[in-house]
Figure 1 (tube, rainbow over the protein chains, first blue to last red):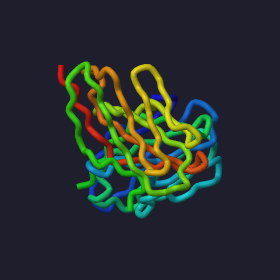
Figure 2: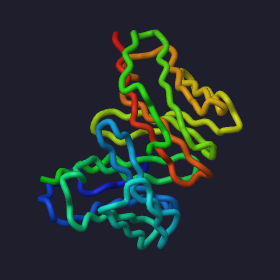
Figure 3: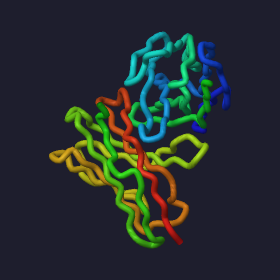
Length: 111
Length: 111
């Protein structure tokens, strides 16, 4: 899992509920990412963090917020979940800047 | 609009033969390209990469070719093995910042 731990692994939410996906790395790499994977759409970047305290929007940021309070952790929050947010979410890190390594994924279903 | 495209959702190849997976991109500022392999219920794993200053990179059975003028890259797997059956994603980045992925090609290597 490239030293990337995601929690929870599985979650079912009702429409309108909120939740936070947690991502933690066991090293001190600067760059961290959140992607979602949907059938036929591949992996799409939600948010990116170049370093502690900084975040940047990716391709599909609407409906999400992120927090990078320290170097190890990068969380993704859904304030009011919608069925369109049913997806597999992957956190990733970039140790050297030229390659990213993914966690094992978090399966989220919004009903 | 997706900046990285994989137009073949699936590919079926006989064991021992060559597998060729294709990828096109639209952003001429992309300068680094990667291929990832993904098994079901796992995170994508890094396979091979290439810088825009090169046109070929080899790693064992895997070779990536880059044609900058056509904005096209391909991954060759020779010889293909049943264990290579997976979804393959190509990705591109500009300046080692954000990484953009294609929609994936599902490779099936038949014994």
